[in-house]
Image (cartoon, rainbow, N blue to C red; front, side, top):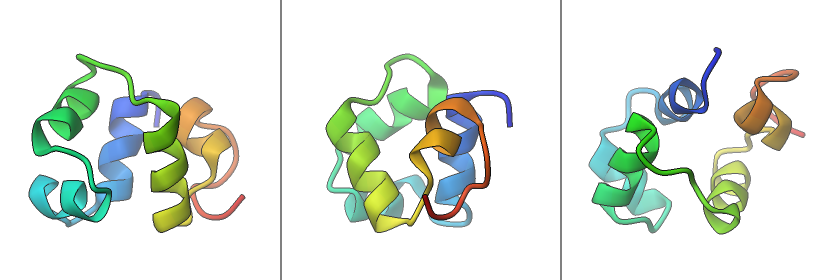
Amino acid sequence: MDTLQKRLRAVRGSLTQSDFASRLQTPLTTLGRYERGTNLPDLDFIINMCTIFDVSPAWLLFGKGSMRGG
């Protein structure tokens, strides 16, 4: 996956944006901006997402390695 936006959507998987935003305790509008590439997620969001969904930060940010763990 070549963009952060695509990787965010991959982590979300079949969850709705609303459910995903709720689990991350992030406003739905903010998540939408992240997925569209209008805004970049901040460090707190990245840490929270990686912790809750067991996602590798290197994969999420740079597309390096595998999606899970790390």
